[in-house]
Amino acid sequence: MQEYIEKLNIIKETAFREIAEAQDSQTLENLRVKYLGKKSELSNILKSVGNISVEERKTLGMTSNTLKNQITEMLEQSKLRIIEMEKQRRFKSEAVDVTMPGLKINDGRLHPLKKVMKEIETIFLGFGFTIADGPEIETDYYNFEALNIPAHHPARDMHDTFYITNNILLRTHTSPVQVRVMENQRPPVKIIAPGKVYRRDSDVSHIPMFHQVEGLWVDKGITFAHLQYILTEFMQKLFYKSIKLRFRPSFFPFTEPSTEVDISCVICGGSGCRVCKNTGWLEVLGAGMVDPEVFKFVDYDPEIYTGFAFGLGVDRIAMLKYKINDLRLFPENDIRFLRQF
Ligand code: PHE
Image 1 (tube, rainbow, N blue to C red):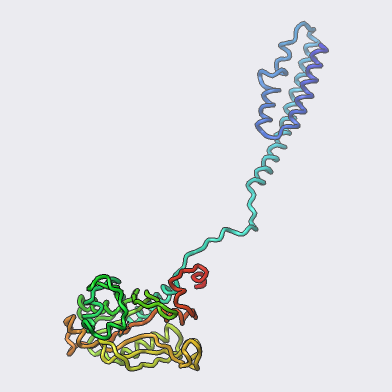
Image 2: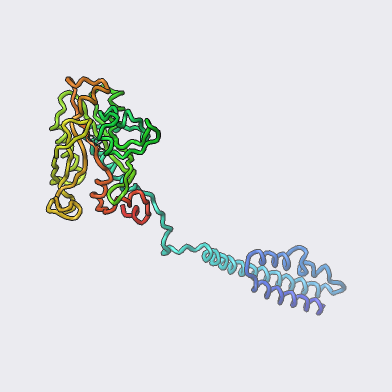
């Protein structure tokens, strides 16, 4: 009998210790099975007992029952302790430091040239123009011939053309789009044609690929006054209201009369600075009334229709608008430069 009491004491001691030391619910569950399960020593102690008196059996039964209850109680408490512990552990591992700076997402943005281009488009759309497009690889016919620049015409020298074959070239201006549009459409024609153009020169103020926006408005009764009005309104919208325009007589084979247009310097306001070379003026575009010779190529009757055309240098405009002093920054695509817009 004493032997069994001893045994119960040992079970009690180890059970209490192991339960107290358990660190997770799985271990605790294993301990429950070990001490209270059907095959546990404690559950079977009475069966294993041999020759003892009824009185002793009763005492042993009560003692082992008491121990069972104690262990159950102990497991219950440990369970609460472990649930709390596991919760804390989970909080710790899942904790988010809300004060940590977030991942920075570098959003894309428009190239400054594209931005100005879009701004220009928006203004002209507001004037009722639509947007036309043409190929960058052009034929001699559209780039020169139909614009009243026949072979051997001295005006061709000005263009520093990239030739692909004798007849095929990279367009040197957006003016060929004028011809393509008029070929396909009867007046009224009221379009702008933004795009890339190519010339073989390269220095601080010239790069071999640059951007123009062509404009063309042909209808009955279009005059030079319309040209002046549209361009003045346009510049005032693009820069500021008090900007001034100066129309200088010039020459283009496809317009007559022709003009080069200056705006009052947007850097110094006209008082003279480095950018305007102390003249107070900046040249920004070529324009004129469409030459009747061009109308002949597209079968428009110059006795009925008149029109104006202009070609705007977008890169120059973007430089002025964003105060950029080197044209070469545009095609370099240095991200530190591009991020500033
Ligand atoms: N195409 C001319 C150029 O690139 C500009 C221009 C366009 C002039 C339309 C008159 C009319 O220099």
